[in-house]
Image (cartoon, rainbow, N blue to C red; front, side, top):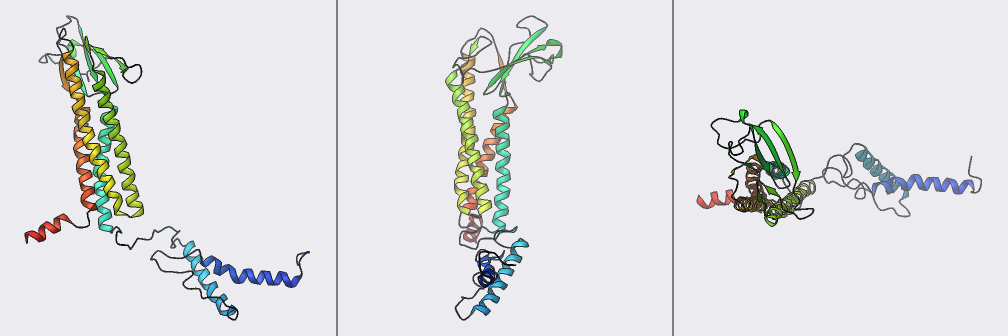
Length: 311
């Protein structure tokens, strides 16, 4: 049964044309397999006026081969990716080294986020007998907020002169600094914070986190696209982020000295806590990770070159 508005002969010709040209059109889209071999246009001959029969068979075979490659996941658009073969391509050994260096950098990123997000940078505590009560206050703070804790003297080590440590059980009250909202300073044990130094330390830490994210994006692009060039900007980002983390610690230390020197009516004992240790280790790890990426981005192996020069 044919279409009512078209003659049967024209419908037959159109159906024959579709069956003839469809395999050849399909083969133009499926170009390569997983090994980079041409399976479509390279295998299909040029169709002329007098070569319709042979061209149709070759085009159909090429189309079926491309279709089988697509269904099995072996084409360029399938499951297995095709490795680049250019001059700047990434070898499997180099890819493994990049992944190992990336793990090292990720450890630094995790330690940085842990240190920046917590408030155990420094602990402040007066002498145990300063207030003459059954309790004594202790305080610990970081970049964003400060927590005051009321401890029982019976829970404190008898050999300890000051109140603390802050990990002991007690009533705690945490408040965020007003540096970033109203611009006001905070008073802790009659001592006033230095707003500009605290804000500068917080901004340096945030800039370091942004650079870590940019470095991670560059490494992901290098591994997914197999391009070694992305290792260079990633190296710069991680090295700069490590330097900014260490600078943030130095600025925070200056802010602490300014806080302690603002008033001497209440003697205070201070000690840096585990958040600062996390940031110190993170800064060193990030710098090492960035240098590793820089060495992997070099077109030659420094170890082999030094070994060859020595021999």
